Image (cartoon, rainbow, N blue to C red; front, side, top):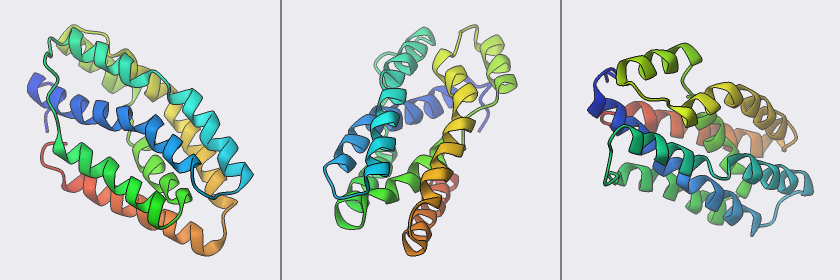
Length: 171
């Protein structure tokens, strides 16, 4: 994948957009299920932190000249698997998905280079480059509060999400 190539960048950002678009609804769905008060508070806080980020990335895509936005079935599968795990396993497993996504943000240097190459400001990606490392720390704190068996299941989900991302064609 060569992000200096506009179509590759659009492919990646479209995937990221669709996963961001699913973030708040996934968190809200998780809140409908039985979990600790601490995890509920964390999910509510994270909803506030993530709200509007999909719109920010959509504006970045429009600035790149993308319209209409490409659909990615892989993103639907990716987020859809989390609905299953929340409903049929435990809402804490969402932490593994979140951990995998938050740890994959671009660096500020990478974003600066992409902005120069494509003559556009990637504001959503820049925001995440600055904030995602702190989100990983917060997620790790939440995982540490879980039982050992639930921690193992969360880490399993994180590993599976990472495998999916590495195996994705062009993402």
